[in-house]
Image 1 (cartoon, rainbow, N blue to C red):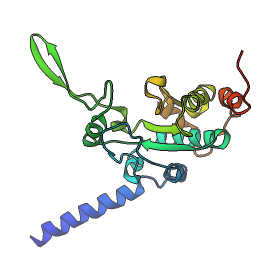
Image 2 (cartoon, rainbow, N blue to C red):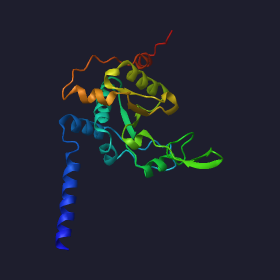
Image 3 (tube, helix red, strand yellow):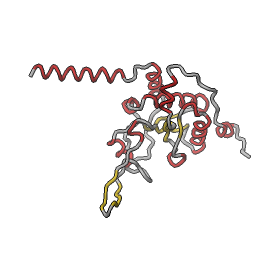
Image 4 (cartoon, rainbow, N blue to C red):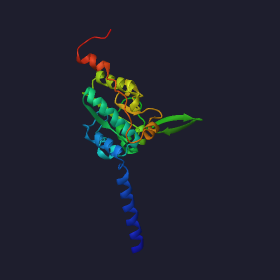
Length: 211
């Protein structure tokens, strides 16, 4: 009995040590710390606050994606102001919570589909559940601020970030296809190309009009 207890204790100790090593890479730990230092709060779009923006949710993000996301958000904040994280990684239970009260399709909400005259219950998987998505709010969350953030992502592909759902799901950002591989290849100190600002926000700030 004592031997079994000792073996179990060693397994738990090793698991704890491995968990602590997850963010030991300097580039990754710096990215995680930057994300943790950003304002974080509930977006208010679900029925209740599912608290998917906490430290643990950020720590469960894919590490290459976290590096890309932090670099992108750092550049955006420097040029265009505040960003708030409203959701990061989600467990299956958290995803179901987020879907309560959400309008439109939601990956954690069950739906019934007919197949060969049989009804099958389908529950999709969100990219939040794989650690490959963040929900972020630009500034105060106006349509113009979100459009600026989307434009900023498109103008700066070196960050490997995009908003695949556009204005249908404004806060939802993911890595570009193949972006994680590019982050891994880049090494610890990549050369960052010049950053292109959002033209839409510049126009808005000077009260100018577009042609």
